[in-house]
Amino acid sequence: MTPSTDPRQAAADRLWAAAQTRTPCPPVRDLMAADDVESAYAVASVNVARRLEAGATRVGRKIGLTSAAVQKQLGVGTPDFGSLLDDMAVPAGGTVPAGALLQPKVEAEVAFLLAADLDGALEDVAEVRAAVAGAMAAIEIVDSRIADWDISYADTVADNASSALYVVSAAVVPLTEVEPVDVVMTMTVNGEKASEGQGSACLDDPLLALLWLARTVRDLGDPLRAGEVVLSGALGPMAVVRPGDVVEADISGLGQISVTFAQEETA
Image 1 (spheres, rainbow, N blue to C red):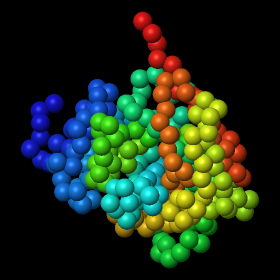
Image 2 (image 1 turned 90 degrees about the horizontal axis):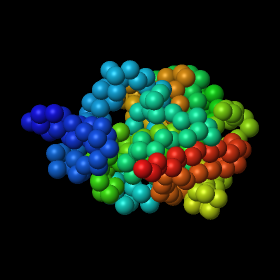
Image 3 (image 1 turned 60 degrees about the vertical axis):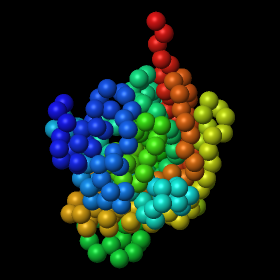
């Protein structure tokens, strides 16, 4: 791949090469200003477009950086978002193939399935609540194409919000039966507690995170649509995973969900 002289294209190419070769790359913040969010999202869109052209379909979005602690760590006061593609979905109870990821971590979340478009005024959380068909337990498998997770806000935005794969439960629970802000989460890795938290850890309420996303992508001219899945953000700290690990999450009102990471083959 011939290096591009356009900084946005060069950043996209660097991240793309890292994903294709399974070799983490240096940060891309040297190619854009640390606060140049517009360029960072433009970089992400280049690589999403490449995957769509190769046959993938966008099925939703993910929200990242919903934790106040993580925002403080990166020196920002706002979440970010990325695209979910159909080839990122892992069946509940399924297995992630060995070698599929670079440096994965997991976090448990509330996912929403949308029953209506969110392209209106979006004046308050009641409007997004009315558009939700139901909530699901989710495990998001995040990954960074950037070596050692040495990321700034611009780096993670450009890297499609450090997304990789995701798992959602089969059951879609109506919001009349569960209040997202009140859920309690426990996540284990190989049976050992690795994370715990609650709905309020996600931007004070997962529905508020959904409202933020709906307004943001609407204003960008690409609103949320009926049928899309939205991962609303972590309910507790993320955990590192390795080949052979089994991850299970229990989210009150939404049930249990699990995913296994295949053991690497030995010669």
